[in-house]
Length: 141
Image (cartoon, rainbow, N blue to C red):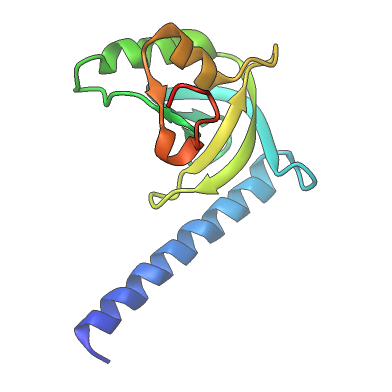
């Protein structure tokens, strides 16, 4: 086996392991509805303007269709604070859309009153629609 093949095999194994951890975490820690492919839980930590964690769930949640500046970029602190104000201490419901290359769950997430988190962050002007992945869902592309 060449070095290139070995590296590719290791990357595949890493992705497979991340997916296995995600599935196991969801099966053990979170109520999941198989028909809707969703999860719900209390927010335990806001990482930045488009990523957060749910109590008892190992992988982070990356908000689908949302692109917020990173913490150290211009506007990053404002986006993080806005996300904190919007979701901290709340129980969210997320429709699982994908798992990204970092093993995070990519989810379209909703507040208890039904508001879409991405739509709210876009409306507040602290983040923008991630058109590459949303396909124009929020009509700002």
